[in-house]
Image (cartoon, rainbow, N blue to C red):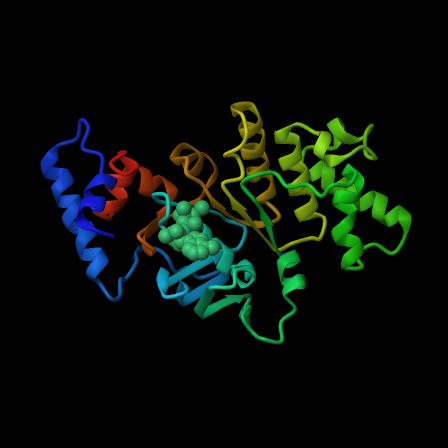
Length: 296
Ligand SMILES: Nc1ncnc2c1ncn2[C@@H]1O[C@H](COP(=O)(O)OP(=O)(O)O)[C@@H](O)[C@H]1O
Ligand SMILES: [Mg+2]
C-alpha cells in the first residue's frame, strides 16, 4: 500500500492530527515488520481450535501474516478490523473454505481438539459440517424450508427414519428461533421468507448437522435492525451449545455478542482481549484508533 493510500485510510476529521500522525507511524512500522507478535490473550487453556503460524496468500499477495490464536470452547469470539484486513480470509482458514479459491494457499497449523484440520486425508465435506458457516447474504437452497434443514442430516446420515428427520428439522428450527414462523409453511420455498427469517433458516441448516463450531461472516449486514437484534439474541443462546466465531464490521455488535474480540489490521492479528477490555482499555494503538473511529 502506498503512503498516500495509507493516509487516506485514516480519517482526520475532528481528530487530533498529532494522534493521527502517530497512528500512521505505527501502521507504517507494521507494514515493514516481517513478524508480529499479537498482544493480549490470544492463547487460552481450554482451546477448542488452535491456530499456529498461519499465513494465507492469494497468488503472491499475502493476506494473513503468521497468526497464532486459540478459540475457546463455547465462547463467542468476534473478529473486527478495517475492510480488507483479512477477517473473512482468516475465518475461512478455520473450515478450509479457502480451499475453494484457486489462487489461495494456506500454510501453518489449524487444529480442533488436537486434530489437524489440514490433514490431506481429512474429509472436508464432513469438516464443513463440524465447522459450519453462515454467510453475509442469506443463501438458502432453492428448496422448501424443510428440505433446506433436512439436506445436511440426510447427506451425513444423521436421521434413521422419517420421524427422526422430522424431529431433527423441528428441533433445528426451534433452536434457530424460526419454528413458530415456519411450522405452517415447511413445504414452501425457503427463498419466500424475509431476509432475517432466511438468515435464521441458514442458521437452522448449519446447526441441523450438529456442528461443534459455527463461523459467521457479517451475518447481519444485509438485515434490518429488528432482524439483527433477533440474530444477536440467537447467538447468545447458541453459545451455550456451540463455539462461535463471528466477523462483524459493527463494533456495537462485537461489544454486544462476544466474550473476546480479535482485532486485525493489514493481515496481522494485532490484539486479542476480553471484549470489554478491547472496547474500554485497548492495549494497542491501532486497536484504539479503530475503536475510536479513525479508520474507515
Ligand atoms: N478471492 C480473492 N482473491 C484475491 N485476493 C483476495 C480474495 N479475497 C480477498 N482478497 C484480498 O485479501 C485481503 C483480505 O481480504 P478479506 O479477507 O476479504 O478482508 P475483510 O474480510 O477483512 O474485508 C484483501 O486485500 C483482499 O483484496
Ligand atoms: Mg470480509
